[in-house]
Structures are given as structure tokens and as C-alpha cells.
Length: 114
Length: 112
Image 1 (cartoon, helix red, strand yellow):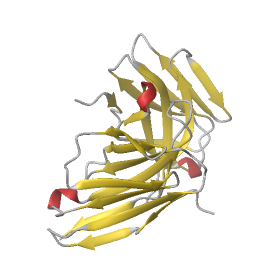
Image 2: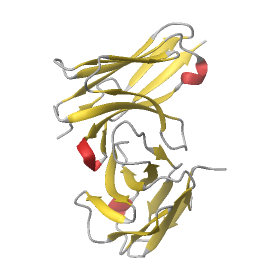
Image 3: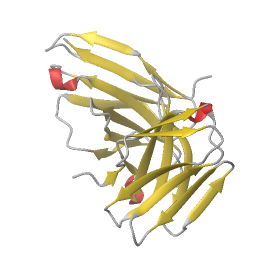
């Protein structure tokens, strides 16, 4: 009974392709996030959704488009993949948006661009 | 501009001893500070947090100390156990946008 699950766990693809990563949480949380961990292990917020509404968009290229069909899901679609997109992408969720509500993370999707 | 810094990339401690992990921040608007633990090929797991209005929070073997004047926080693990070997991330929370800013992590190795 995984709390935050991401699929796929690994994704290897070529430059220029379009790919999607799916995220689902069964914690009943109302806020979900996408983070990117780059080669320097720096974990950085990309997007945040609260009740399916976008609340954070951290100057991410337009090629990245999140989509939240309902509160339990937040998917990430990436168009025209570039070498610099190679990273580990983490999905997370929390109940509410306040600091005393810790975020729960999935195990990550390792994206490798050839 | 890195607002949250963990200046020690790694730390090795003997089992049973105290582990002290440090974190510095620059933004006075952070309202909560959190520590996450991460094993390889897994996502970060929440460990302990502290409000900016407190200076100490304790949970079992884990204690977080906050020094606001120095913009510094630390995580103490006593006693350290081999299962504590992981990467520890310090994170700072900003206001109602629920944005977490992470440090680059410290790899803790607890040796027998």
C-alpha cells in the first residue's frame, strides 16, 4: 500500500521525444508537487497543485506540462526532451500547504536522455 | 543563489556516538525547517521539523536545534545506529505557498 507511487521508475529515451510520468497518492492529501533532482543532487521544486489548481510554477520551460485530473493524481508531460532533462523526478504530496504538514515523496523516476 | 546550505557533503560516525548534521540558511522568511532522510533509489522520508518560533524539537533519538540569529540549524542523532546511514537533507519552508527549498544533502555513514 504505497502512499505516493510514480510510474515508470526508469525511463530511457532519445532526444526530441515526448514522455509522461504518472503520480498517484492514496493519502487523501490535497496538495501535490513535482521536484527535479539534478546530477549535483540538488532537489528543486518545479510545480505544486492544490485541489487541482496550479499554485507554484518555478520558471520551468514550457516543454514541461503538469496535469492534475483529480486530487490524487499529478502527471508530468515533457515535450521535445533535451539532454539537460536527464534527472530524477520526484512526486510528493501533503495535506495543506503549511510547513507543519510534511511532504511525502514517491521513490522517483530516473529519466535518461540518449 | 543557494538559500539553504549543507556545507558538509559527508560525515562518518561510530555506532553509539552522536551524529551532528548542520544546515545554514539565508532567507529570514522561512517559517518551518524540516529534515528528510534518503536511502538510495528511494524518495526522501520526513524525519523531524521545527517551527521558526521554536529553538528545539525532539523526537526519540532525533533532536533539531534552531539558532535564528545565526540562521543555523542542526540535527542531532543519539545514539547513532547503522540503519541511520543515509543522505540527510535540510529543507526550509516558505509561507503559504508550501514551497520547500532543499540543501544539497549530507551523506551520513554510521560505522560499527
